[in-house]
Length: 209
Length: 209
DNA sequence: GCTTGAAATGAACGATCGTTCAATTAAACT
DNA sequence: AGTTTAATTGAACGATCGTTCATTTCAAGC
Image 1 (cartoon, each protein chain N blue to C red):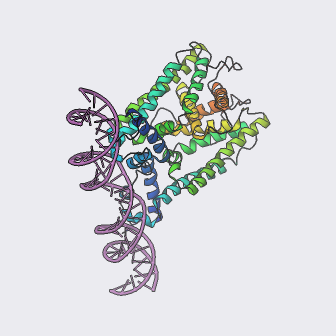
Image 2: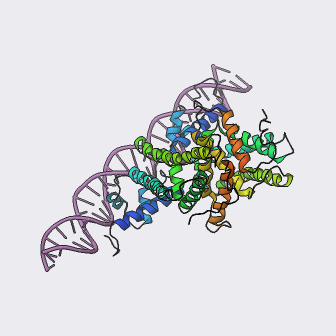
């Protein structure tokens, strides 16, 4: 029908993605019915299958897009500011918070619905997740070499850092008392300590835009 | 039928709980059917309703039991070792890891399936979760007073600590290369730094049994 | 051995699920 | 205006869902 003039197909697909992200995050993958999803955007259920061949493909698409966005954005952010590992750790910390705060549903999905994926689909997403984690591990290991960080076990520290950072999205509310910047600063302080930051302990405000 | 001699009803209920915990953690609450659950323990689906009036009641029961176990166990563990906040923080850290490592399904459930709860049921579980978190906040605040800890924001630090600790259950494997004790020690080192532990930085081995 | 009460069953109910498909409508192109 | 193509629909399929209930089976008390 394409009842709205501006509806060019791509717009509709984006609308499906947004609604699906919200509904799955709210009620879970199995609990979201294709009929309910279609109703959310004013379509019949059958219309969805013009954009996604299957419900599982839709879920995988959402998770893959979430991880690809993350990896691409971090790939861009890591380009600037080369040298000392401590500065790269700060960059990572602030990047992770800034990137995830506006995407709570995507974060929730990519943690909770991994189990709903086909084994092959799971492997693909898990690989991206590992790649992101590996980036942090290398920062921590470099810190050991250049002397700006001191972690006992970089692999465990990376997991602890990411877990604490990602946990922010479970309680952060935009109308809450804490600004993203305050959160960034507080977590950077904690993470710097946790990873044994030894230099510029006080000069933590070399913040990129 | 009660085909097994030792089946006394209570045993059956426990078997239902165990199987439900495993199945929900594996596939999600909505994805677990009562028929599949019953089959898992060698019963017909109708038999389940002799033990739990509804699927929702079963989920709530699992989550409530998980939180009650946690609060009661922590209530016992916190009794010993009174004074310095830094020691209580170490006790909390090791307790949390030891308590949760053998309960990965319960942890996963109480994070992922909160959304599947009725509003009243959700409020009940959320209250218990807050109560546990509050216990940690008080330790961190006490540390500010007695000078053994130095957190900028105890409430945020508590969330960061719990998130990083709880995250352990997502990657820990009993057959993995890390022993629970190694994990405990590593995390206590990181958390002590993160919370600005100022005394006995090296004497971190006042470990309770 | 008979009775009693609990434990479990198989069949069924209405609802909803993901998905398909022939038919229909709207938009784009000539 | 007529033709083509993309977008959408309503109806339907078989399967499965949570739950109920009359009935049957089992274990124990007398």
